[in-house]
Length: 482
Ligand code: SAM
Image (tube, rainbow, N blue to C red; front, top):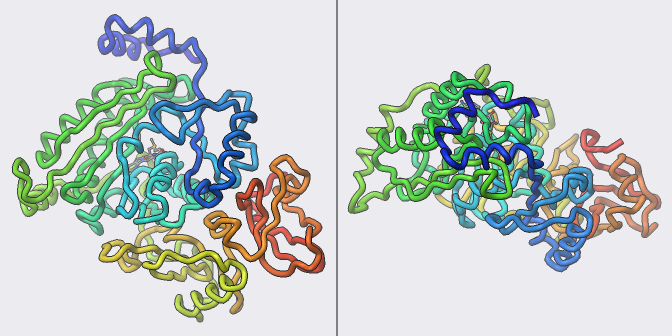
């Protein structure tokens, strides 16, 4: 590893005192590797769960992460990211200590949740697992390229009830004041806790970088405060060790926003636990009428004083009213007509799958989405106008010249048992390797005709279209593994 900056070691010595040597020795031991099992997938295939777990145990030699029920350590040599289970969205690779933040957020099915700095999606996908398809998750990322990766991960994990936005925090807070039951702010930070994992973080570190990060965190937090409902919970987390970006930022926040109380702080130190470095603070916004709280009007007036413009790390993304994909499609069919085509498709190919009952169809160019809006929610399609939204809900498919073509996101969001036809092959079979390369396969049932799901261990990998004894491969080109 690149050697540690002297100023960093000195700061750690002041912070940790007698524990410093034990902490510094942790740099001599290997970094930890973690993955999370996706409960949305196991809920779609409960009968397959014991077999899936035992496969993970033998293939990746997993062992449980104590603070996260779905979290497991795996051995470096196991390479789970290359396994078909990864492409099927059964697993998400995430540093074990980072799993603590969503556990502390503790989202409940049916709630409205915001992940304000969400890419690449570790916490978003963990939160979505806890929402179990009920309620709505807004996953936001300020940088366009990272927002696209976030959207891909939301899709791979089969999340039905998430919107992915690409906005600066103040663009969201002006639209959705007091809208969310829970907010995760996993802030951009100096990354001291990642030094073992990412040598680049060491070379970018300097006392000035710590100051800049802490200023950026303090510019984002007021927007998070504004968007939380009274009585709601905010988790502020970083993957850095210094007090300036952690406890001191939280003390500053509590002074600026006295309607908040600190419920808990957690620190993950690599010499105390098996994991890298992480910090999380659990903050609660006092409810209206709370004996110790302040009135709602006072809260809003106070937050209005903090409304300001936030600068991202680099260039600021320009809001746009244009559809996220920017493609020109068959806009002649409105959303209801497009939904009609989807429903015809679903009746034939997905008879067991029902869209969440409350929601709205959205047509962006040729792409049809289902935005699952909980009753009375401020997160309507109108509230998304003018916002860059790479995923305004579940992508059901595309309407091309009056025909409906199902989207890859839909294949990953449904269970094999919900489809009229599916063919399953073992993860290590030549058929799965061929499918992932983008090849067509001979149909196990030569009479099969129409859209169906190719699955492994019961988990959908993507669509095929069967005809003439062949399963025509419909895996998106960008996801094929040569
Ligand atoms: N929560 C993510 C996860 O679990 O995968 C990791 C988030 S990462 C620690 C912080 C994110 O904040 C980055 O994706 C970065 O692009 C974003 N960011 C940078 N500047 C920002 C700003 N001014 N406002 C909001 N987000 C910002």
